[in-house]
Length: 227
Image (cartoon, rainbow, N blue to C red; front, side, top):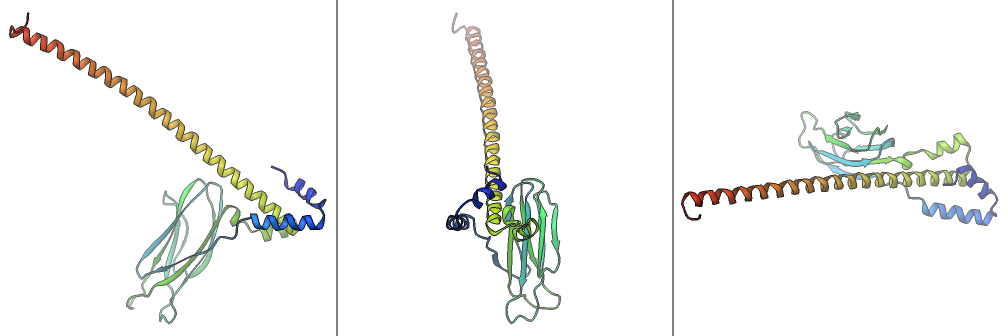
């Protein structure tokens, strides 16, 4: 992979028209921003969203819980984000609007749960509108702040974003290759165990058949059916 400094040097040597064309291509190739998810949360209900995320990934998110128009009571819901081990990564009671961020320690399935709360002394709470926008990896990075800190030009910033995206794709492929190797090792180990079990079963059947032959021969001799 070409380093960012080398790419910058090469792009500075390009004519303005070619640089503009390459910038346009980069903007087309880069993935668009993640779209938020919206759903209705009925009263006294609990809805969860799950997502698999790799290790050492920055996860950021924004959420908003809104009561339906014309509702006498305001929004009321609890938010809790956990992993498969039950570790609480973020919790907020009476969540209406806010942000969260955490870094994953291992590859896992993370769950964000919204639980509606019914105020005391009221009737059935109408459905609330929940909006969640969760990003991780390259999408979670604030490139505007990176550009300010490192004083990057727009084209250099897009190259930085593309470099991070390429690194993320390479890491994903490396993880899939590792998983494939683990699955292959598991299959080979299982095949060896099945082979040994088959050989053991075959010897057991041969031994049982031999015992039956000698037993029947002894029985028939005792009954004087054979000599």
